[in-house]
Amino acid sequence: MTDPRLDDLAARVPGLRLLTELADLIHYGRDWTRRWGPAPLAVALPDTVGQVQAIVRWANGCQIALVPSGGRTGLSGGAVATRGELVLSLERMNRVLGFDATDRLLEVEAGITLHATHEAARAQGLLYPVDFGARGSCTIGGNIATNAGGIRVIRYGTTREWIAGLTVVAGNGELLQLNRGLVKNSSGYDLRQLMIGSEGTLGVVVGAQLKLTDPPPPAQTMLLALPHMDALMQVFALFRTQLKLQAFEFFTDVALRHVLAHGAQRAIDADQPYYVVAEYDAADERDEQAALLAFEDGVREGWISDGVIAQSEAQAAALWRLREGITESLAPRKPYKNDIALRISAMPAFLHEMQELLAREYPQMEVVWFGHIGDGNLHINVLPPPEMEQAEFVARCERVTQLLADALQRHGGSISAEHGIGLVKRAYLGSTRSAAEIALMRGVRHAFDPNGILNPGKLFEQES
Image (cartoon, one colour):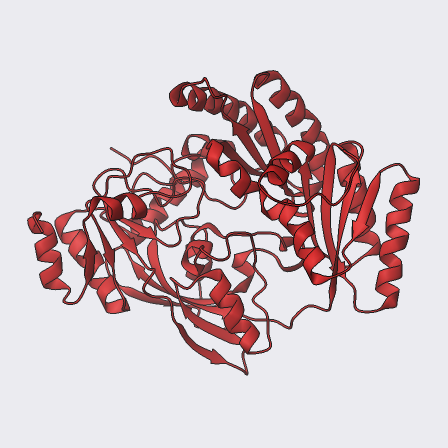
């Protein structure tokens, strides 16, 4: 190693794996945004909590910033290292530490993937219900850092609802055991909940106690084609009343074209502007009959143009691919992404305002939007024209994002539903949080990380 600071780190933390090759710096120094050139000092891959504590203490002494890193599947620049930071990757801390059958708690290290967590829960005959398309590469630590939601929030809620306890290394290197798996704990501030969604700015999550639940009853998957935008909320209200929904996801015809070009199979022949993938309980014939009646009601009202019910697990997976494959199909185009949230009651009015805004401001750009309509979360992807320079494209999109943030503020929404603020959205934080709230957030950050070494520049601008 050529940097004496890294020599010092290696001496202080025996056995620590450090990476300094350019390919490793690029790989670990960026997330899915791809908007910033990675330039970390090095990558540290600890495999014990003690090593993480030692790294944090070394960083404080040397005044070197740390960027905690999980699967780096984020879309807000929250895991990007651009200014000589040390990337602190938790990928080697990926073990299941134990299972408590009485309390139904699965204890894991932060670097375990969501998919491996699902498998560990399944091995106990139980379910960890948070789920989304990046399950094979995203990690529990990253999910906690952004309070990830996914495709079944309508039934199970976000990550926050499923964290019984956290093990965290604070910004000064102290080890915190937060809540310890208790169901009831009225002994002051719930610092566990404060950590969830903090984007690595308050501490490094190294372990978690996850609540597990019973597997859901057998489910059925239905794909619906809808003739107009208003039908989205009308069909959602209809299905929520008549069925026990597990998921209700929508996408547009533009999104469908991209995912079909990427290898998915068409399931409905006729083209329609909007589509919904609905998953609902199907434990018995009564549930199946309710689904058919709900579908018929929607057709009779003119809200549903066509539909198909999966006849096998393979067909259900193929229908889900139409929704879950969208992000991957768009990735080669390097889209500019917005991830927004509103109350469901505010959604109809906002959808019309948003559609007018996007049509007016992006007349020559392709806009792909989809999302979790059942919990008020929309994903908006703007694709750059081939001839447009990246800097000009981002500048145009940022101007429109400010307009979008203003509209969200009027409708009581949020500029970030589930991907965090990171670098991408910090300029728009004031549309969701008041100046007083942001000041309090800065104070909390300083209390946990007095030297400002944890993920600086993320969430909000650094103070001079």
